[in-house]
Image (cartoon, rainbow, N blue to C red; front, side, top):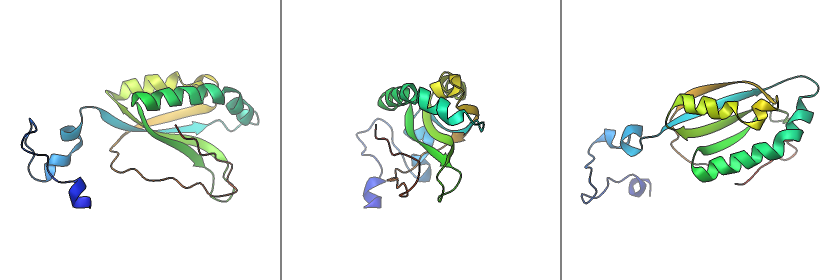
Length: 144
């Protein structure tokens, strides 16, 4: 089955791909992918701020997913046992790293002082996986 998914494109396609380099990021898409790791504030009021701006953050995330800007996102936890959120990870597909920085800077979790800082890293998203959230975790699965 995997060989079916990765077989070379037919010769009717305007580009002819040969060899291993046929599946590099530049050959498949012109947009670049970036991993954003955002770290939460740790003060006592951080959770209250998160809950206050969460609806606006999720509305933006839903728009971003529909627009193809966000490929995947999820919570970073302090442990699998406790499940306390300490940050977020987001995979963006964008024209530039600066565009991702600018977009994150406008997110309600930044303007609402939920995320204290973030980093943007070059990334290559290669497979989609189904996510499992352990029972008893304070994390919540949200479908877009």
